[in-house]
Image 1 (cartoon, rainbow, N blue to C red):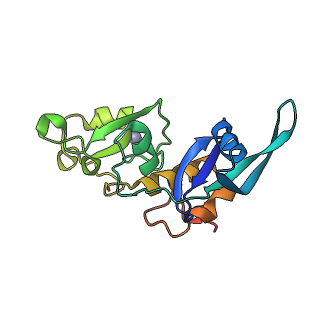
Image 2 (image 1 turned 90 degrees about the vertical axis):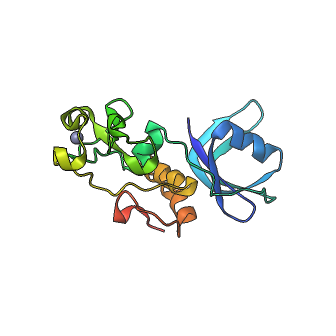
Length: 181
Ligand SMILES: [Zn+2]
């Protein structure tokens, strides 16, 4: 299902929502449409272009400081869908959550102690620390903000029309050429 980028009244990125919800917001007159996809949907009485970017007319209170939950999906987004040991491309199906300092050695399940890893690398590392296993993650793990996760999601889905709305978001991108704002 097409996703639509929802902006706050001041232009800040809020979230991705399903296009059906976006159209209902348009029909209720609660949003302005900034960008559209080429796709059209027809109802009995009229047809609509599916919006790509919509903005609330009013500002809703929203903080980006809210924590991003440590799910495998969000971890994959932060770690660019790559195994942080061998670089292999990962999906939700073949990825594992590697505890850099293993749980059995007192490591915790927190953003700064986990990286995405393929199954072979994870089992090769086993219950060893990076030093013992001589396996160092390619990134220094960081705590993502909600906006960064949303932007990485946008990059992954590859919708050019969204990119300018993420300009100025700090944090690593998947590729340096990804943000063509
Ligand atoms: Zn690997």
